[in-house]
Length: 362
Image 1: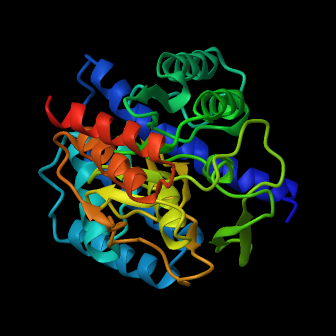
Image 2: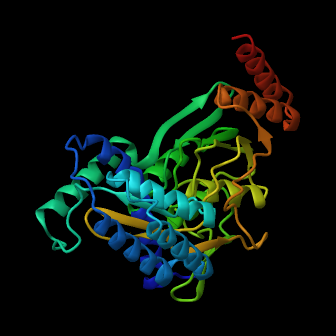
């Protein structure tokens, strides 16, 4: 179950591209300069480069060929000829690819302010970009945005993304140690857009005993190899065992956030509460094209060791469906009711009953 350097490289790729997707919206919002219109020649070149990368890298080669044929046919018919805005063109290509693949990760992006493809890796522009990205993550505490102990000794932890293990290892360790004495925990993934599989594995490890548990596999097309992901035998914080776990999901919960919910649901370690998730299970990599265009192309697919499938296109369906409004409060009540039902000690049961009565009157 030890991971080789190649495996670590693969999972780092997944993380970096998810981070790119998360930050691109913010970068675009900051770009106040209207880029020059794109030409029909540029559009043809972008389509050719996108198709070439698809055929080489996309985890489903037969689908890649269908996408190539469709967008090249559209281009030949002049369906993109009146588009002169790069972002509109990128969205048009993305939407066509999505119709064929039903793959939520597969997208073309346009960022004219991005450094040139052939820029040196130590260029000032790239250093500035990476520094800005890190500062952005620091402002959001690397995805761990809220922690609390709710009335009735119910823990609450909001996780908005699974960024690199090196950045969050101490944070999750401290958070779980802080929450170790609670009687139930609510993990809020309603705003979680995904991240690195190694970090999903790390966080999941806190809810299982030290004996490793097989939680997920990822098949990579390029190596024609399936990598296994098991929970960790050794972690630095306190494990959260034999207590109720509730995972909150929404219709924007995506990718690694979905994997975490799916893994714990299938292993019956958590109750999933909320709404069906977005449905993206194929990790990948961002490939630069040219002139500010790039493509996120899934190079692998998740395979659950129990179900032998994943949540792609369907999302993770909650065990208990709740609307986003007041989802934390309602799950808090569910947790207290569960504790009342399972607690044998009379005084402790009375504590939970009194707390439920108090919050129900608010």
